[in-house]
Length: 184
Image 1: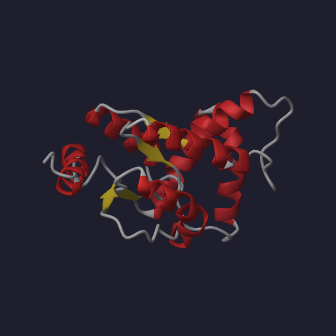
Image 2: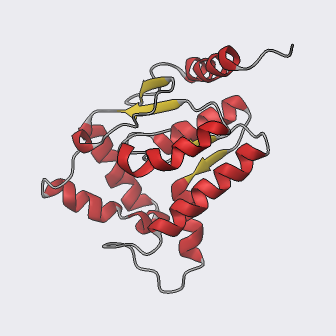
């Protein structure tokens, strides 16, 4: 599950994992767990937990995939930062990319809402992100999708899901079924 901030990645990842009957591994939840065990942690700037979070996230994915577990993995997954960590997993999994999209105004409203309503989001720099957007230093247009040569589905999360959650699950199931080796 990929996409820019506020595009609905986490919500869709959790819904898709429920639909498929598998775990959702959410990068921000892993970071939040790390924040809880790091006394005095302050977000912003050169965040000291970013790389340990990245290592833990991909470590968890690797362990689950080695165990034969289907997972829905959710993070921003911008190309230059995430592709190098995803490519090695291609030997363990049939990777599918679902890229969440929504108009910038909706994404902005979602970021504002979660920053105001969820104290745990402080670890993820939503207030800093809102300041960067206001200053013209960040926009959804700056998001660079993953460039892996794998099946990819864009999902509009503006008002529900287009395509539907059932169609998204079918995309995942069909892609896996079509490439799975035959039992003979």
